[in-house]
Image (tube, rainbow, N blue to C red; front, side, top):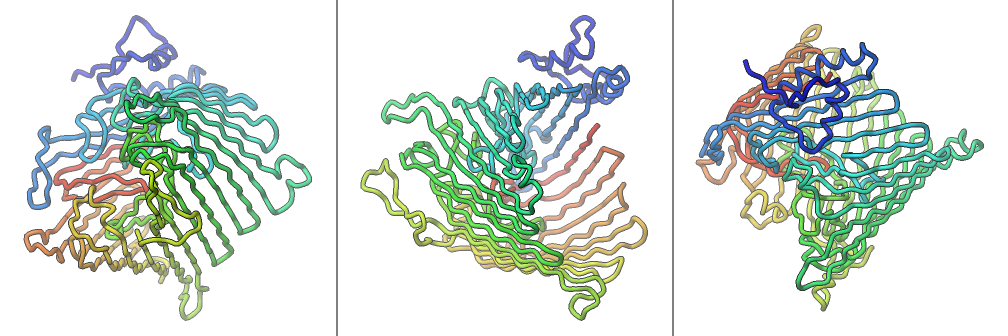
Length: 574
């Protein structure tokens, strides 16, 4: 068996020299497997020699593709696709350094990554007392993220990390400041040289008022204040329009906490930023977010309000889809985990939306007629997204006008869902959900190919039952149904899962599109999976059909193409 090393051996190197060489731009990368094997043993060697510690995690996802014309699964010339990464972190005292190796041979369908491998993530960090300095690649968030948020979501193939320098400091009690400068990773590339053309600069300050004054530190009411500013510099090379080279976005926030009450509010403003997304208009953008919640034993209440207008902000004015986004606009909708409710995801509309969400959860006391022997929890969640009332301007470069607190326009999305959870005995519990959706599918036409122009109205029911057979053995069933006359029509779904905790699990489910208007497309989407957990490692494999659709996490979405074939996922930490 011939395993080519990831790092070519150059003479006799100490482990520290080998680690530092990983930060050089020209690193020969040949084998993901060899590096993983080396590092699992190197971690113990480093600790025993008092040279610091090495730890990390890895994941490899692969799929064998089969042509399935019935569901629209296309031919995949390579037959096998794979996405893999390995995170390696070295720590010693106040010093921390890390790299992430990624390989796509070739990229799994539905992910915007170039085929190949590389080390797009590498950093060195020094923390001592009030100083925290990072050089290299990093993730950062200011406030709720409406001004700046860089993060990684492996399941979406999303990564908008910054490559540059960041300084964080805690100069006095309760005061935290951050400054940064860098360029963003392009979602289509694994190469450092393919970073964004725009340079991102930012600063943030947060003040925990109570921590700064000893007399206030003991009172129940806690107050936090924050302010952020981020700018992008990108050279103007447009032969026709004069585009601003420096574009800024700034915001302020307030957080009040007292007992079970929590109030968070943030406002943000973006100066004129002509871009591909907003059709090169010079209109400024603005946003407001308010989140309030109250909880006590047996009761939880929350309310969220958001208004955004022309708040798409990127490190490249020509970028589209999910590429090179600087800020994050959270979705005010419930993030569903059951399968059929995910037929109706919501993608935040950065060019303008009103959003309202409210939820109340109440636990009926145990040993009552409605509560049963263990109590019953009832949760009602309602979310509604509306378009802004826009009036086009005479000058097309101004875009449109809209009153900040004006009337709402058409409904983009509405989700009303009721969830009831009850434990009937020590070994049996059940969850029942009723959901009603109404959304404007024209927003998703480019992604999904839906042809109907009318809004989608759908009703979904979910029954989830779990039975602890004995000891560590657990059996779980799901029955789901979706009734709709739009899109692809109604669906039914059944799942069974058996778990022998914490080692093994096996599951199988079938989605049946029995209500499709085209009889030839009334198909079953069957999938079977099995997995094993071995200490810190997990192996999962399966076979089945994947329906085409849109996968969303927190309002960020990607297209999931139809596929048929075997899947394998291996992950672990050390």
